[in-house]
Amino acid sequence: MADIDIDRLLEVEASAIQKDAEVERIIACFKLDPYDILELEVGCVEKDIKMAYRKKSLMIHPDKVKHPKARDAFDMLKKAETDLMDLGKRTFLISIIDEAKYEVKKAQPLAMAPTDPFFSSPVYKGLVKQKTKDLLIEVELRKRKLMKKEMEAEGEVARKQDEVISERKRKQEAQKVWEDTRDDRVQGWRNFQAGKTAGGKMKRKKPSTFRPPKAVAEDSLPYSKRPTTSSASEGF
Image (cartoon, rainbow, N blue to C red; front, side, top):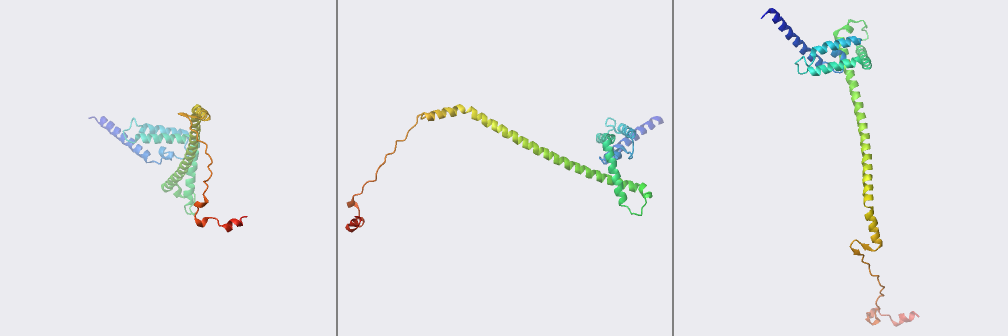
């Protein structure tokens, strides 16, 4: 095999390794930090954003990379480019990073001057990166909590609307039943007025007659309960 073929083969293999490494780097990035995903510094312009996205998208495109997570990495890359191209989102992200820098500086000794080499060291950048991540997570959690409340409120409104619709439907069905049975009710009332039922004439009760109590003969009373002569004379 010619040396040129070996060199070309090694170049292709090295290129594949670099592509896989870039996929893994993007996957390991914090999803809410587009600067980290695109490897851009704060303050970059739109031209830099487009160039970085184009270069990396060609490198890790799922159609050209066999890595199993190439699609996920490509989606993260696209979202990062979209977020940074949005002026509102980019401005908000810069404000979060500035807040992270302030918090990190505030945590340092007061004697440390702003020109101290520490503030340009990898340690400082790592602290700012971690603080930025913490702040973005906090914002995201508040956002999700608010969305959950809004969804619950929307669900409660929808539930009440369903109750109103169900109640209206129930009333309509009851009204329909009432109207459908109107003829039966009218006929039943007419039959009642005519003294009839569905099977024929109604049975009328015989009028009750007054029966006076039977007279009890005096001789039939016990001797102890018979009126005496004296008590009879007292009545006069």
